[in-house]
Structure formats: structure tokens, C-alpha cells
Amino acid sequence: MEHQDLPAGRALVTRRALEVIVALLALAFGVSIILGALEYHVGWGERGPEPGYFPFWMGMIVVIGSIGALFQAVLSPRFADAPTAITADQARRITAFLMPMLGFLVVALLFKMGLYVGMLAYMLTVMLWQGRYRLPATLAFSFGTVIFFYFVFERWLHVPLLKGPLEAWLGLH
Picture 1 (cartoon, rainbow, N blue to C red):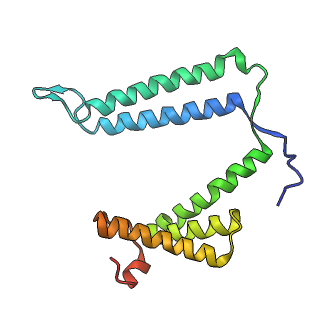
Picture 2: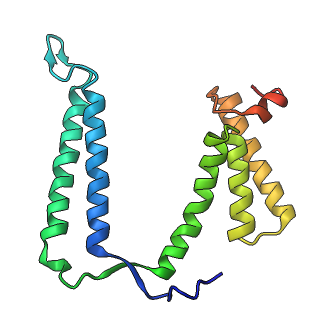
Picture 3: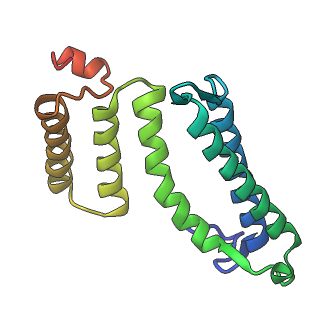
């Protein structure tokens, strides 16, 4: 399923652009940690650090590091040639890897089908589409994996995972 308009070696993302994107994502992550910590006291109390103290300072470290990485990505002369970070062929492989995971999230969370149904859909998709396994082996392994994790989490560890209407219908809630 190759696209004729994108040559396999064509550069899609430069190294500089990728580093800027990652630095901005890290910056957003650090800011979210700080904002979460600010919901609690971030100072020092009579018994020691307050609940938000450690997360606040860890968030600050992430923010400072990401700002440094951002400046380095923008100002560094080592990116003058703007080497390729991701080619069209690599982007196709990355997409093929990420699409089943996105499908898992959509099935499990957006459609509220639960983690076990999402896991089953993920396993079936990856084994059939990417692994090219035969249907009987795919069904056996996929259902076996879901059953195994059900017993590990629900029965042995007593850790209930997100379930949907199918588990309710089967009486597994």
C-alpha cells in the first residue's frame, strides 16, 4: 500500500524540527506537573514537605531541562545542515506501529468497551494485519491472552480493570 506521491527516502521531518517538538512536549508535561502540584501546598510545613513540594520541584526540573533543550534545538549550529530525522518510509512504519494502539484506545476508552475488549481487538489486529498469522492461531492466542490477564488481574491480584458492557453481559463485573 505504497503511496506514489511520497518517495520512500523523502525527508518528512528534520532533526531540528523533531527536537523542537519533543522539547515543547516535555515543556507542556513539566507545566502540567507544576499545575497539578499547585493544587496542593508546595511549601515546607512543620512536619516536613507538603504534598505538592516534590512534584512541584520535579516539574520545575523538567521545565528547565526542556527550555534548555528547546534553545539548543533552535540555536545549535549542528543543525545547520538540517539532517533528516524521519523519512516517508519510516513514517509509514511508525504509523503502522501506532495505529493499532490508537485503535485500542478508541475501542477501550472512547467507545467504553473496556480494556479486555480493547486488548482483544488490539491483539487480533496486530497478529492478522502486521504479523500475518493464520486466523486459528490468532484467535487462540488473542483470546488466551485476554483470559490470562483477566485471571491475573481480577482473580489473583484483585485489581479490577476497566470493563465495558460485554463483561457485564457475561457477568464478569
